Every structure is written in C-alpha cells, then in structure tokens.
Length: 265
Ligand SMILES: Nc1ncnc2c1ncn2[C@@H]1O[C@H](COP(=O)(O)OP(=O)(O)OP(=O)(O)O)[C@@H](O)[C@H]1O
Image (cartoon, rainbow, N blue to C red):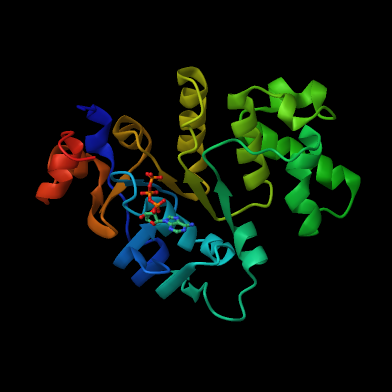
C-alpha cells in the first residue's frame, strides 16, 4: 500500500463543511454509533473504512438524515453543515437531501429516460425556468459525471438500459444535478468492474474541486487512491481519523493497524 501521492495530501481543516459531535445511533436496542465526533473538510474526499457492521453506512446516513426513513433508527447528538443544525425541526429533509446528495451501492436509476433521471431533482426543486435551462442542467450534470458522450444520442432511452458502470455514473449525474454541496457515496463501486470503478474513482477526484465528498468503502486500496482524509470505524466507535497517508502508513491505534494489515475485518 505504498502510494507516493499519499505524502502530498495536506488538508486545510480550516474549511470545515460538516461537524458532528456526540453522535449516537440506536436501532431499537442495538447501539450502532457510539459518541462520534468528527469534522469533515470542504473540497476533500473523506473515506470511512472499517469491518462489516462497524457503523460506516449508519453514520453516513446521519449526514443527510436518511436514517429518518428507518423506523427503528434513533439519532442523538449534534450535526452541523456550514454551522447549521441539520436536525433542527425547521430543516426540511427533502431540501437537505438536495444539498447533501447521495449515491448508493447498487446503481438505482429511476424507471425513466436518461434525461428524466437527471432532470428529476432540478424539476422538483424548481431549478430551471425554461426547457432550455433544464436541457443545460442535464447536459452539464452528464458531462461532469463523464457520461455525456455515451448518453447524448440516447437521452430519451431508459436509464435502466445502460451498463452497470454507466448507470452508476447516471446516478452520480442525478445526484449532482441539484448542485449539492456534499456528496455521500455508500460503496459506489461495489457493483462495478475494474474499468467502471476506475472511471468512477477519477470522477470522485474531479468532484472534490466543487464538493465535499464522503465515501464508504470496503476497499482500502480505493480509500488510499481517492481520499485525502480517512476515518476508521470499529464496533460503532470512530477509532482514528487522520490524513489518509498517515492512517495507511503510520496509524496510531492498534485496532487501525490490525485492520489495515488484514488482521481484523
Ligand atoms: N435498518 C437497520 N435496522 C436494524 N439494525 C441495523 C439497520 N441498519 C444497520 N443496522 C445495524 O447497525 C450496525 C451497523 O451497521 P452498518 O450497516 O451501519 O455497518 P457498516 O459498517 O456500513 O457495514 P457493512 O460494511 O457491512 O455495510 C450493525 O450491527 C447492523 O446490524
């Protein structure tokens, strides 16, 4: 896991996008997240790693209130984006999710055309005044998701007719079409082959010039390739959080060391 590039990645933590303090999540009696504090920088890719069941996805879902949709889930603590409490009763979760977009493990295009998949969010949030505006938003989102060349002649064809890797890029285009400020990605490459994975990883690297990207991954190689900061979770605790290079070359906690050297997980 020697990657020269890792040494060059200093992150300016002055520019905090998300700050979480004392976060606990319960599913009934299961205590899935235990008193997590973390500050996530803007314009940075932050990876969440750790063994299966350690709470990575649960914590990720706290950041756009997706746990609200799970009846058994109860979230405690304080989570702020740009200093605003996202669990405040005045916050509309639908508006929040336009600002904090999400891409899931399995590509999940809507049963609609490629165009309508990308136009969906801008339409419900009234982001386009004219058809020309909407066309432009769709084109820009597809271009930024590196799918425009493959999709431009088949915009009216079903999104579900694309290959797996193209579908995942379509889902990324759909997520960025509403101009989110944060993009959450829950194992976005786990259903993809190595070529499509490479394309999505390149895209993640480009996206960080505009967004704060948080990615859950089971692949330590992927975390090392795409992220600047890495958080290691274990049994619901955030054990260690640091520059990615430091986590992979000089971890401070023996549990992190065991995980990255393959002894736990
Ligand atoms: N919807 C749910 N209802 C009840 N318990 C849940 C639910 N989702 C997760 N859990 C529990 O919460 C804990 C953390 O799960 P979570 O999916 O967040 O872990 P993870 O680190 O993302 O795992 P994986 O890497 O396997 O996806 C586990 O004990 C899991 O069984």
